[in-house]
Figure 1 (cartoon, helix red, strand yellow):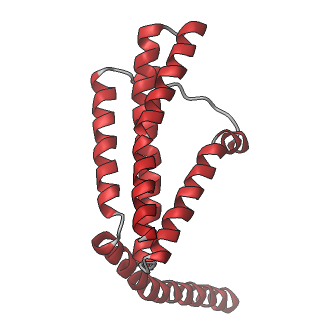
Figure 2 (cartoon, rainbow, N blue to C red; figure 1 turned 30 degrees about the vertical axis):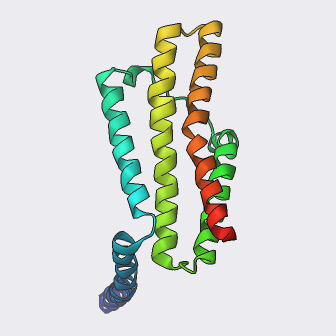
Length: 184
């Protein structure tokens, strides 16, 4: 019986040490990460971009709900690797955007953890907003009007692609303005 009690006390001691270690790590690193998150939310360079993207997401969700487009969004079950391969062009573009904006932070000497985290959060929110607008709303709206057949699919691809391109025409002007300011 003493052997069982000794094992029980040893087990309780190990559990207590693990809990103390975790609490210590949580307090130390938790405070550190909380400080980073606090500084990111207050002082991150891309916070206004993130907030505007959240507004766009909410608007797109509202329109999708009002137009009753939810049943039209189809979910396909496929493997994770197939999904990554399918989304690779978007990942490459997002990586390029992250490198370019990170380079801007380096050039302007504003590269710090809060700005970098706000850049990542803004980049992710931009992708989500564009998916809701162009694939969740616009593509389904056009497909609803022109049908789900071959001709309707071609019209849907052309129209949503054209509007997607026009939407991103703003990026060309912002890059031009940035390059002009850089050359001065």
